[in-house]
Length: 279
Image (cartoon, rainbow, N blue to C red; front, side, top):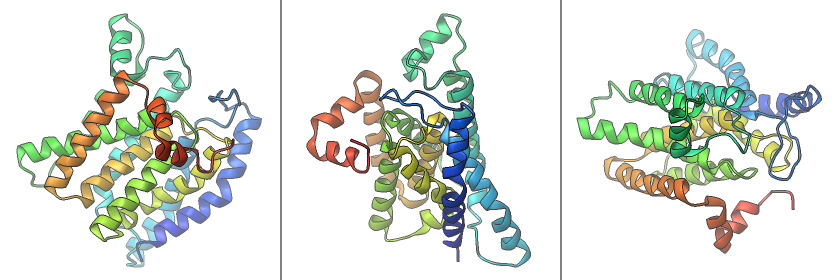
């Protein structure tokens, strides 16, 4: 019955998120996107809100009615998922996360700190490290395995933030990763564990692709955290190291080169990136 968390959060998100986005636009909670339009911003705040609303009846019934609606392991990861989403919201509200003049990437935030400017990205990096260290502790892992898990969780979250440059790109990358993990391991456990958050992401993807909303750092961080957790709970030790190496390489590339330009140069990635997006 754990998939009921996905079903409930998906139904709730489909009912409330479109009108809530319209209300955000009416009240001026918007940001200019890459085309010069002004969609609702940040959608990540709505993703978290809907997930928490759905969590209320699920948690109550799971405990009081003794129903198997939520995976017990969710408790371990909940603090990290919500914490990094909150840090992303801080970046959206105070760090001008949608502003092209805001510092970006590790080098940009380091330069901002060195020049005495407020860098919410640097705050986010340090705080996310603390949240990740807490989440992966107490699992009986050896020192090197613990550090690898910590790095995988942090870098996966950061990578999805780097991908958030076009509508729907982050969500597509997440769904492709999630599908690959479930097929490769032949399990639906990541969806059972994270379904209460995945439902709103599905509806959010439709809104971002139609440019009615922008994820913001809150949304990109949330989805990146879900991706990192999915990797940790699905992959074995050797596969985690391979995933970590791939994510390190992609992160390094994103720091020095344009991921969007690389996608445009590769026909398959360009076609996938354009699916569902307004021409």
